[in-house]
Image 1 (cartoon, rainbow, N blue to C red):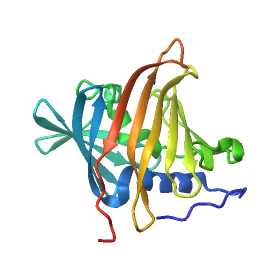
Image 2: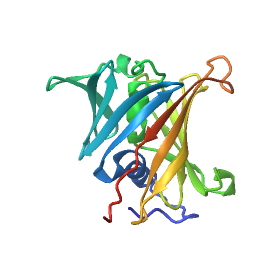
Image 3: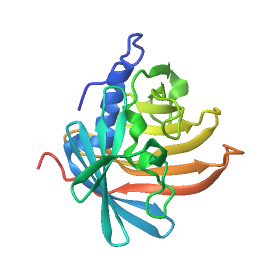
Image 4: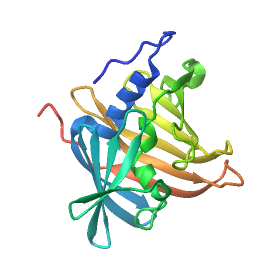
Length: 227
């Protein structure tokens, strides 16, 4: 696990902070992990495998497994559909397509916006606490405006362990579109963390304070790395 900047530092490297956060939230230390997208009674199995600069996602829909990859670029990440061994870069207009009768789209499942660079620290005071944890609040603008569903995102990153407890995604109109909240985590005996359940709230475009759809990303237990 990477060391995090100390609270109160004026020279916090936000991109380095986000790199640590990605390791805790997405890559799971390059472990292959399984999970489920849940909307009501609808459950969609999925898996992710981190392999260097590529993360492979697969999900099961109508008894068939579908695959797409996230290819990490210098300032962003692109999505690639893989079918029968053939890869095709996904059109950005498809990033918002829903997966298997849920409200979770390709960009949501991949958390593509976590790879944006050039973030800035908004707050690291006591006002940045969430779920009883001291956090850094960081904002990152979309490096390619108009690509994807968000113009910018705001993240609450745990000062101690790098977990991102909440991510708010805003549209070009400045309104909150979606909120991602980690509701439970698992801590391994080596001191590392990964999220167990993430709640995804879709907000009403006319009233962003109102949630109109609720989905969950739920991860299976990760084998203890010390065993």
